[in-house]
Amino acid sequence: MTTKERLEAVVRKMQHEQHISRDALVHGWCNVFSVEAKKAIPDAVIVASDFGGLIDEHEFLKIGNKYYDAQDTSGVDSPDQLKYFRKDFGHFTIPKGYRTQVTIRKWPHL
Image (cartoon, rainbow, N blue to C red; front, top):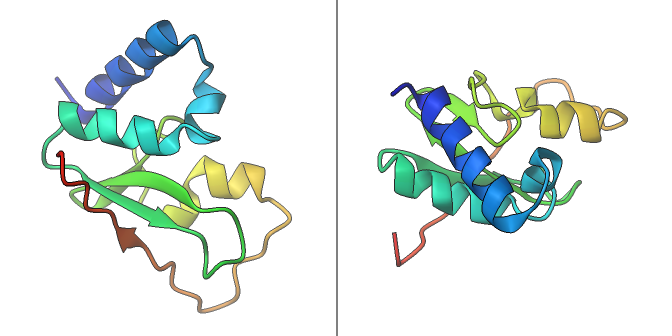
C-alpha cells in the first residue's frame, strides 16, 4: 500500500467509527488522526506548527520529505502548503523569508 492509500484508510476508518467529516479530522481531531495514522505508518513523525503563535496549532505528519494530514493525503513539500494553512488561514500571510517551524510530538504510547 502507498502512503496515500494508508492515510485514506485511516480517514475512512475514523469517519466510520467517529461519524465525523474529513474536515473535522483537521479541525479539532488532527491530533487523533495523527496518532491513528502513525499506528498505520510507524515511520511517520507527528509534528505540529502554530506559525510562532500566530494561529491555532495543527498536528500533522512528516513521512520522509513530505508533510501530510487528513486533507493532504498525497503529501506536500512544506507545512505551509497544507490546505489547512492555505485554505483556513487564507488571510494569514507568511512573512517573507519565514521558515515554518515544526515541533516534533513524542507520544509515550506510540
